[in-house]
Length: 465
Ligand code: ARG
Image 1: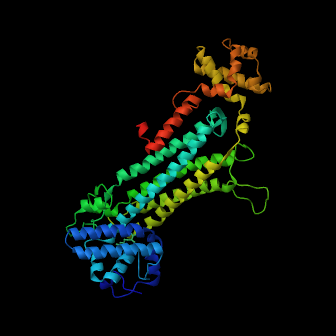
Image 2 (image 1 turned 60 degrees about the horizontal axis):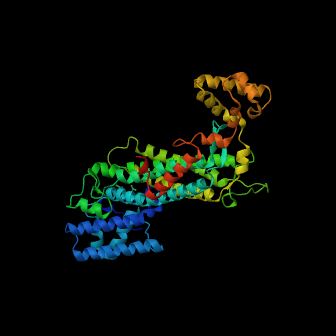
Image 3 (image 1 turned 120 degrees about the vertical axis):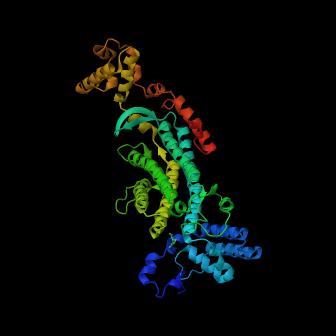
């Protein structure tokens, strides 16, 4: 076992349990890419400030590049003394280059290094996640285009409420996900400051051009305050927060489709590629993909909550507690990206039973349209609601469905009723009444589809601002 990076001050080795307790390498090795990138930018900054000569810089940069290949090929020789990815890379660089390598740690701390690595890592992975969300939006849009005229009962309180177009329902998720995607863009705006150069907490004592360093790492500017920079994990919470939001959205689709693909509804069938069977009951085909989306949503919420708890009351500036930010973040990003891709697959392969949807429409769904009919004849809505309520009660008492009542029976409840009231029992007619912007009518739904197409190509929801 090699020396620790703080061995000068210490006369005893770290307790064995403490080594395991303290090490973050088993999980933060995922940061290798970001750590090498940050090291290369730091080496360049050290050259600019005269700490490395041009030649030394070239050696360091080339060696760092070779470490990247070692990580990628899985040949990087980790040592039991490596506490984390930062100390591992520094040790290896020093092993290869001697004192020149060791001088990489001039004027910096792992505190500013880890926060910079982490930000770079999240930035890259959020770009990937945004791509996955966009693919899901595209799948929803494609399905919506095929189902503008597919009608089904819209539900509130899990009870049939009003007829809606299936495309309209699908587009609801499209627009929710577009807000999520714009939050990913916002993340960059809010967190586009580079912490490197902040040192342990007070700032580096070497004359580093932090703005140039920030630009080199793709940030808009250097962080304004070194205490803030080393203790800041808002960017982690904002990332898990937006993942929670994405999961909440897709978990609602999952919940609906689990029911809608059951025997009780029969509106949809989840494709075999996204279903699993039972080990005991041969007839079963279960929507496990969607159930796991629901389950993983709980997990992602839990991890977000872990991070909130981690930061509550944490003293300024760095404390080792902050090492616990890694696993929840890695897991959240991984599970969210996976869940979004699974839902995309489910949407792309879903079997839609349009006939079953239509058959399920209950005649009572037109009650609101009947009340609106009376409103168009001049009655206040409250009075119209009362009258139609009595008609519904009458139909129930007499054991008739609402659409089997005669025009004469309607007239008994109010003289404003004409025989054309019977035309209202048509779902196409019902949705066509709702062609206002944002409604479920076919004109409106087509308008939404056009808007959605533009949003997808524009990469954000700027159209709505
Ligand atoms: N592995 C540590 C982390 O993730 C790196 C920073 C260690 N800094 C320290 N002062 N011990 O937070």
